[in-house]
Length: 204
Ligand code: URA
Image 1: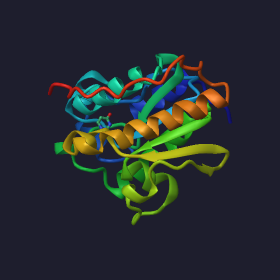
Image 2: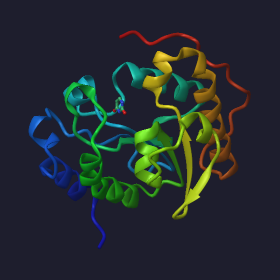
Image 3: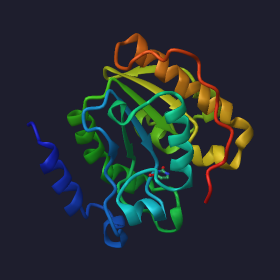
Image 4: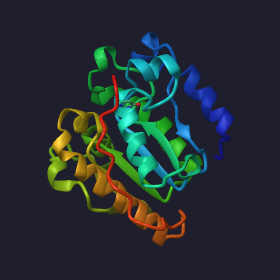
């Protein structure tokens, strides 16, 4: 059955499939374009995201945005979402039950958006997509895998990079690989020259 974006949003807004629905201020669905070729999937909204109803608008989001801007991504290139659409209290990791309850909505989101490339930001997203709970991000990041017709790039969560700034170059390289692949596939315009990695730290 085909579902429209508006109906999908209504389903998200009325969702009470797990206890996070009771404590949210806003359901956090996406930012970017609803027909973008590249989807980024994080973990779950934090306080700022819950307040604004948009994903990745807090400090980790500002780091992600810094890297995306520097790599020449524009709003129509990406769709940013999360494993869960409601804020887990105290910014804890969503439980398996919460992630499972929200999976149907993320599945619908992917079917509507039809991305060609999916970037998994951190272990929670990787586990949801692959079922692998024991993977080490340091070992699996940076290489594309193919799953159900999607090209998938697992990489570090930007919040991890905020705590481990010396690893920033790895997230940068992974995003660069995504950009190059998107260019090769004709999904993004080619950048005229290789950008430099931004080194600033986003303010809190
Ligand atoms: N971390 C996430 O995983 N998602 C957000 O939207 C913000 C921070």
